[in-house]
Image 1 (cartoon, rainbow, N blue to C red):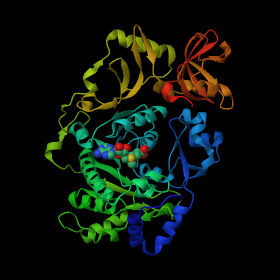
Image 2 (cartoon, rainbow, N blue to C red):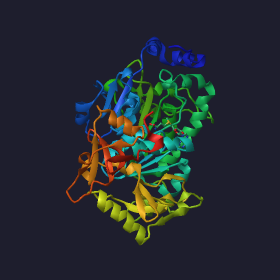
Image 3 (cartoon, rainbow, N blue to C red):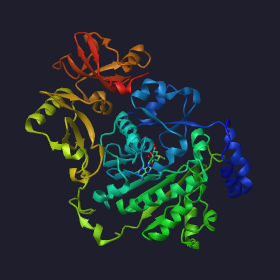
Image 4 (tube, rainbow, N blue to C red):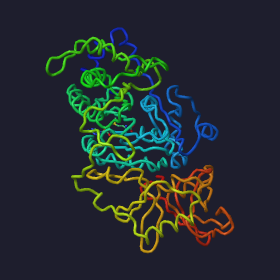
Amino acid sequence: MGYALPQDFVAKMERLLGEEYERFMQSYDAARFYGIRVNTLKIAVESFEHISPFSLRKIPWAQEGFYVHEEARPGKHPYYHAGLYYIQEPSAMAPVELLDIQQDDRVLDLCAAPGGKSTQIAAKLAGTGLLVTNDNHPDRTKALAKNIELYGVRNAVVLNAVPEEIARTFANYFDKILIDAPCSGEGMFRKDEDMAKQWAKHSVEKCVLMQRDILRTAARLLAPGGRIVYSTCTFSPEENEAMIAEFLEQDSRFHIVPIGEDHGFAKGQGEWIRTLTDEAGKSFEETTIQAVNGTGRLWPHRLEGEGHFLAVLQHDGTLASRDESLEDTSGRKKKEVRGSKASAQDQKTKLTSDEQELVQQFMQDHLITALSGEAVRYGQHVYMSPVERERLDGLKVVRPGFFIGTLKKNRFEPAHPLATALRPEEVTRWIHLSSSDDEIIRYLRGETLTLPEDRVQRGNESVPAKGYALICVDGYSVGWGKWLDGMLKNEYPAGWRWT
Ligand SMILES: C[S@@+](CC[C@H](N)C(=O)[O-])C[C@H]1O[C@@H](n2cnc3c(N)ncnc32)[C@H](O)[C@@H]1O
């Protein structure tokens, strides 16, 4: 390692780890691990294994995860632009596995940017249910929205809010909630030198305040019987076992689902919080200390990945208060919907019948598939929204749903995310490019291509060659192109291009 670890951190780890400390410290001299996670919204794991340009080795705790070599440079391959995989640190793939996502679940990813875990959740939902993905940092939600779109997710809403704001319209709503909490990042020092440089003793205290707030609000957002997975990439017991212990003592409706010791995972460290007290000087009960042993720790000296903490909090199925128990139309419990804040929502409208016709005509001419959800207009943009509109009232909405296109004067222009989400068998006109040919790189750079008419594939003979075609690499969509008289006008967006 070419930089010094913070002294206070080193001293703390020595005190906590005792005889394991030496092995822990040696892990900082070892190489870090690189991972990719196959995006099953676009390709099956076995099919990817078949075409993978990199040698792959399974990550034991992630169904779709593989180790790749550092030199593989997976971000520099057309398959990355086709959203076939997400580049993700191996340990970071563990939390979503513990959410136990089922078909049709409503899932909330509260601290989601840049979207590694959200895209993993979306793949597990496989187009069913709903993903609400949120981050309170406005700039970071841009990367989050881009990743949702790159990976072909159709059933997500992207928010830029604090959890408290979301609770106004989504109380008791979600079956599963992920809190990948902002934390002091001690587990990332090997991967990210800046994290080590920015660490200071007080960062733990600051993070504890944020985490407590987020966790308490998440409990209000969860439907009875739902599950919260809380994760951090830090070692400090204050942000981990103590955070969970405090939560359990305050909300008796939750219990811990033990994570176990498969794959080199280690148990939580109840012992480490025995001597910790809260601001009021209160310490934890013995039963709580035992319970938090059921949380999990991923140690860099015990497995092939960085340091993480994980806790699975299962709700017993009863409601907290009458206040949050109004019935909604789906028979679930719902708090009264109210909007207070001015936002992009104010401009949302239903499509007029003329606009609906434009959209329908485009769909008829270009798609063989029906899109699910309600078409809503925000300004000139049209989205298929997977959630009732009033839920979004008063919230800062980055994407109200699946962005399918833009209304222009007398025409409908398809959006890039519509292309990334489609498969060639779902469209009437498509063009195949090969990953081993320079053409795909030229397309990804935004160049116009010269392509003869016989390169335009069509569902049947009545489809003319001229018009929007789905551009695919080795059979997987990357974007739109508009073919006319031997030329392919490039519709690959500027901000997405190969550089
Ligand atoms: C560990 S990162 C999330 C990484 C992300 N889950 C992934 O897998 O790509 C934590 C995120 O929490 C966000 N955050 C911090 N405080 C927050 C809050 N009060 N509400 C929502 N998000 C918050 C930060 O902006 C940051 O993006």
